Length: 202
Image (cartoon, rainbow, N blue to C red; front, side, top):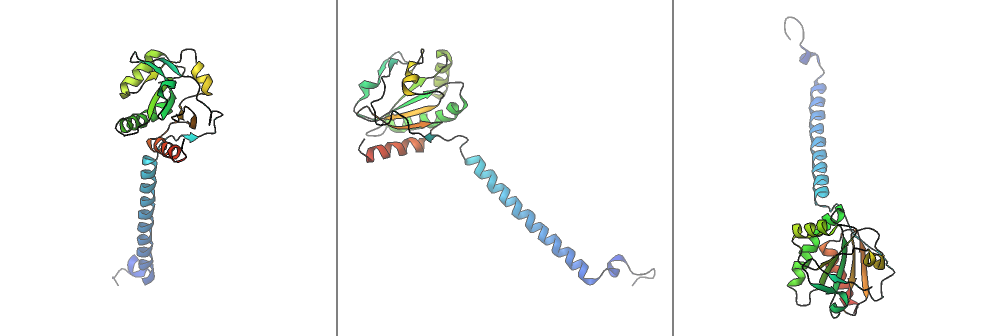
């Protein structure tokens, strides 16, 4: 004890210092646990796709796909009926549509993969309520190599029941619609729909 009386540390009960240390230790563990949770949440949020397509029960399922023909951006004539004998995805898009922008890398990756597959599926895109100039620029920026057909009168979209993009249909070798998606599809979804259709014998 000092001459002037006990110090604050000397006056405090012996258990108080230990309690403070325990509380500080517990607080550090809680802070560390919270930090770990926040990191996990951030990683999940960063890796989870912002958009996700939904498979829908289109009235076209099981029916022959509506006619789709026109001159694509490369100046070539495209006709869906001429594609009989293999699978074809019909995709409706617009350059101004954020989900379409999110979807395009998946379509590019899928097309690249299918071009090198033994029985690869085809892909055709239809411009939805967009100028040809903007749609052409959009396609060029992403390096899309498949046919893109303008739908100036909107008749193709109407026939397919498309009211907003993106929307994608899988047409089987017999020309029938066997799957339909609304929203931006992923490469995995395109692959899985193709596997399912082939398994069912479509």
